[in-house]
Structures are given as C-alpha cells and as structure tokens.
Length: 529
Image 1 (cartoon, rainbow, N blue to C red):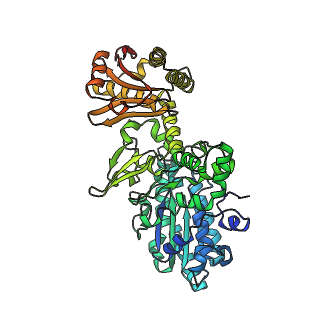
Image 2: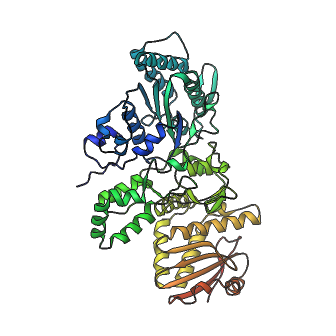
Image 3: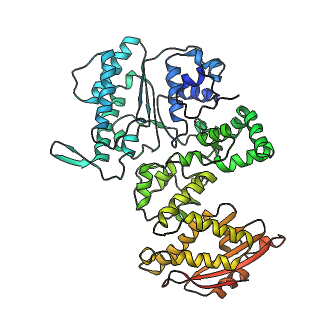
C-alpha cells in the first residue's frame, strides 16, 4: 500500500520511511548547476518546505537518500557543503520581539560552532559565520530560507505597532527593517556563498528588505521550473496509477472519469507562459489517500493577512477574475486595499489561465473548483453577513427550485433574499455604484450555485448574457435590469439570440427578465417566457 507524504516536509523522513516521492531531482540538479541565488514564490502547502529539505540533504552530500532518483545518475561529486537553514514557518510573529529573538537565537547557535565576532549588527555577524564556515570546510556556504516573508505577512495590514526606544512604528515596517539588515549578508558574503534559495508566498520585487544586495533570480514564473513544486498530470498518472484505479473502483466510475473529477477539483495551476498544468499537491494527495473529494487545501485555513486585506477592499471578485493583466500588475509585492490582486494571485486563489504573447499579458482566474467554490463562499459569507438566515441554506433551496423548474419559487427566493439585506448595505451614492452592487450580488449568488453549469457575463456573438444556468432538465437565461422593466429584458434575450446555442438542446428553456429596484432593494418586476 502506498504511503502518501501528507504534511511530510522532511526529505530524510520521506525517503527513510518509504513514503512515495514524486521525483523532482532532475529539476533540482539543473537549478543548483545554473545559478547561485534564487527566489521561488508558491502558495502555502505547495511543497516549498519539502523542496528546501531536499536541497539541504543534497548539499550535505547524503547520497544514499537519493538512490534510484534522477539525480543519482546525474551527480558525480556528492560534495558536502556547510548548510545554513532558516525556517520561519513555525513561529507566530504577531508578538513584538519575536522576530528579533528568532534571528538572534539562530545566529547565536551558528556562532557557537564557528565563533563569535566583534560585530554588533546581525547581518555582519551572519556574514562572519559564513566566512568562518567557508574557511573551515574549504567550500562555500549554502543558505536556505523557508517562508522568508512570514514575519511580514503575519502582521500585514494588522495595525500592530512596535516600540523601539522612543520610536513607535508599524510592526510590519519594523519587521521589514530587521529583515533588511539580516538579508544584507548576501552582498557582504557573496564570495562565501555557493547557493542561496529563499521561498515564500510574496514576490520580492517591491520589498525593501532586499535593497542593496545582489538580487535573487526569481524563478517563480520561469518555464524551466514551473513544476518544481506541485504534481503534473504526467506525474499523477505515473506515480499514482494504482491509486487512481482504487479511487475509481470506490466511486463506481472509470479511471478516465476519476481523472476528470480530480482535474476539475485540484488541477489548473499555471506559473508561466508555458502553461504546464500543476495540481495542488496537498489536496490531491489527501484525495488519493482517502478516496474522497473534499476541499482539503481551502479548509486547511485561509491566511489571516488575506482575510484582513479583503475585509475592507473596494474590489469585487467579478472585476478581478477573467481579465488579462500585465505581469507587473500581479507579481509586485505591495498589495493594498486598493489593489489586492497581487496577494490573491500569490496566495494561490487565482492563477494564470491563458497567455497572449504579442501583448505579454496573462489571463487570471480561479485555478479549479476547490478554490473557486471556497473563495466565492468566503467572499459571499463576508458580503452577506448581515443576513439572519444562512446563505448556504438559501442556496440549497434555490438549487431545489432550479432543478425542479419552479420559476415562481425562484422569484420568491430572490425576493426574500434581497429584502433581507439591510438598506445601509445596499445604499450607494450614484447610479454606477448601485448597478455595481446589484451586479456583484447576483454574481456571488450564481457562482455559489456550483452544482450546475453556471455562466455569468457569458460572451456570445451578439453580446454578453447576464447569466445562464444549466441543470439536467432545464436551462435558464437571465437578463437583469436595474430600475427598468422585465419586457425590455426579455426582448433583449430574444433580439440578441442568447438562446441560439441551445436550439438543438432537449432541455426545457426559460427566459427570465428580472428588474430590481434601487429604492426597495428587491425585485420590482419579473417575467418568464
């Protein structure tokens, strides 16, 4: 029986205890022989820590752990280097003083081995350790820093302050200054460094902690290393063929069908214009181990910094997703409440879905059903939180009505739902904002109806349809109007031929024109054809 390395971050433990390992060592060999200082951004639980552990064992010369892997036939030297590994993952940096303590304790432990210098700054002390290690071992040093940005992310946009002497500042800014001094070592110790890798969620391009030293080669969107973390389709079928058969048998479907289910649920990440499909490894391994499709990654926790950022942003998801962006718009570190896109992308909730070479722009959207459904639910629960009744319960009632073709019940459900939203929530200053509010309300509602095929703002030859919902027995084409009339909405559906793609479809087709009042906040006119 296969042993799935769920939550295993130690390469040594994974290999010694017989867990299955998706062999990334050919990519690792290329990485270490073609550069010196690297940075890799990937979402949480995507295998960054295991990658760091693998590199650590490689540079320590642990040849026996790599027996039978690709690198076993590539590497001939297996030299042992002095390795300095820092993992910020296990600490809570919301308490002032934690970052200083972690760095001080780490450097002090190295100084016990290589000697204490007379320098007072942490960066120069670290540089002295590296120089002494180089001198003692006769080989340059390897530095591996896992989740380099966690001290900043933990307090990002939190308002937490720190006091140093008589100066009070945001803890986020204080941590940035501390890390800036610490990472300055990479310039001072350049001649003592063989290899450096920093991993994290956020890009470093706008982070001042890296100013003043040799910039890492950012391989986050490098086509050569797109699959360095995560699992590709080829790897899934090669390493987990037996698991796929077992899972298909348990579900009573074919292997081809179970692969389609897994692809829709967990695949869909792309990290460069090469567009290599990458599965979320945490969710995929959990699903294969249990034989059950669930939202493993999303339920493992949404980062607190992202929740804080989204709680007061003015951006709507429908305005962020399904659009082409210049990479500068989503790879920069400095996400703000006015521009949360970089953080949403870097945290793994959006990914690249298409690339236009001529303009060098990327289409961003949800990677798969797990992320789409989870993130939409998160946004909706915050957006609709003043409601007294459960949004989930209401969605189930709407699904029943859609499935049974009960258009009058659909109208009643929408009327009651909208009427229960407080006036203060829907009050907007101008017509554009009112239209934006109603549009987003129904975008969230219909994206939550994920059991069926749902299109919002679907592009057709004659224009964009507001919403189409396909169930096994019915097709609903909705056209929404704010302060208009339902006849106009129905006429637009007919005039623009929104139903034309379904001419040969055997399911019953409904045109629904719905008008909403900006005064009452609920349905003012509803007609069905």
